[in-house]
Length: 314
Ligand SMILES: [Zn+2]
Ligand SMILES: [Zn+2]
Image (cartoon, rainbow, N blue to C red; front, side, top):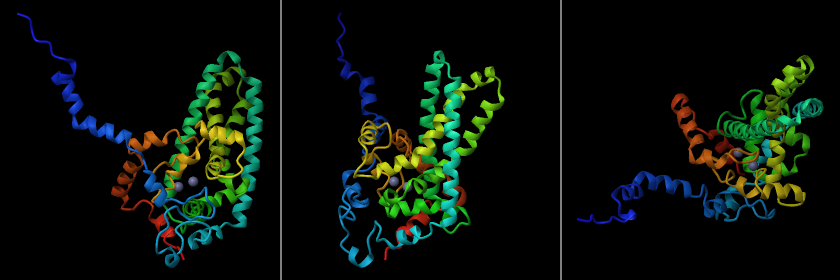
């Protein structure tokens, strides 16, 4: 006797998978937009229109003061905390870092072996990915924890993060030194170590460490360039065409992509170098998971200081 044929779509196993609530939940989560168009319009500053404060203005804004922009009292207070001592530190760091980059580039060109190019390129690619992760981690930590009142780091390193959320386009009015000073500073120990390696190691040892040093070099270049790339992501007028090309092809942080971070309360999309890791980290709930853990261990609420500054409107 012939057995009845069961069509594949009616097979109980396939149906079980298709109807599994877990699969449904994962699919819904993966396809859901991180921020809807409505959330972006209602809770972030309309940066491409310099005359507008936000796309959907609050009715009581005339009384409470603007939510964002250079007229926000908290933003003005934070901008005034930029000191002469801080400026000197930034100038020194930019000068040292640029010198180290040039010296290392000369050493790299002198020692490079074309037959190992594929390993070097792979190392360089992972350097860029690491830079994106580091940008996200430092940005998340500075946005979410600590306060401007903390000695030394508060005024010097956390202040720009607070200012940036309430006046996002202020970064476009900062010059090269103010934009890049801190990121250049971070790379100095790593670039110094590389120069040291090139000076003291034998040719064999230099070749053995060459892929590693290519990784460190691209990591350092992209860490150093992060805030410049971030500044471009807030610049809607007069960008060079090659920068717009790199943004539109998502080689560096695109403007539209970074806007998602600027939706209050600024709790996601922290990576600001290429932004490649933002979507996977959000879908893995990486930042919110870390915050739950830290709050459980310490009792501190994430972004308490950020919210305090956002509230100083008038
Ligand atoms: Zn931020
Ligand atoms: Zn930004």
